[in-house]
Length: 265
Image (cartoon, rainbow, N blue to C red; front, side):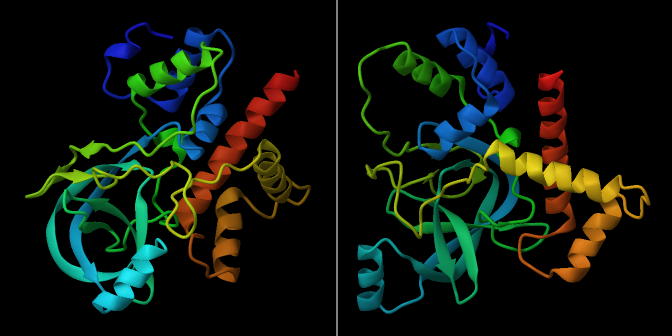
C-alpha cells in the first residue's frame, strides 16, 4: 500500500481497502467498503459519456407538489444542455415520461438534470447495462481517512448524512451537484428515490460462479461461457440481461470463486 495515496484525487476500491487496512490495523476488503458505501459512509465516482438533459415536471403544479412531498418526481425532458463525463453516487433518480428512469444532478435552484448515455441514447440508472460495478469506481482518499478516524475512535458515531459534492466532470452553464446544496437528508433514504447499490452476499456470487462452471465444464462440454450467455439472451428478454452485463457478472463471479478456492488451499 503506497503512502502516496493521500496525495491522489481518486483511488481504486482495492487501493482504498489497502489504505484503510493500514490506517486501522485490521483487514478491510473491497466488500467491506462496498457495504459502507451502500450504508452512506462513502461516495463513489464513475466515468460516463452522457448528455445533460434538463427536466421539467410532467404533472401539473398541484400534483407535482403532492408527489414531491412524498419524495417522488415525475419529469419530462426539456432540453439538452451540456455534457457529462463523470458522476458521483449516490444520486437521486426520477421517473421520465411513462417508461424511463434516470439518475439526476441538481443545480443551486434544485432543478433536475438527467444523464442520457451518448452511445445507447438511454438514460443512466441503476439498471443500465453498462453501469460499472463498485470495483470499477473511484474513491477519494479523504473519505478513507475520515473512516479511519471514526474507526480508531471508540466514541459512537452519528448516522451519515448525504455528502453534497460539486460535479467537476460536466460541461454546463450551471454548477451541478449530486444533491441540492442545502440538502441535509439522512444518507439512507426511503424508496423510491433511494440510490442503493445492492451488495450480494458472497455465497450468492459463489453460487453463480459454481453454476457457470458446472454448465460449461461438464462431461459433454456442450457449452462455453459465450454460448451460455447466448442461451440466456435467447430465452430471457429482460431489462438488465444484456451480453455485456452478463459478461461482467460471470467475470466477477469467476474471480471471486478463484479467490475463495485459493483461500481454502
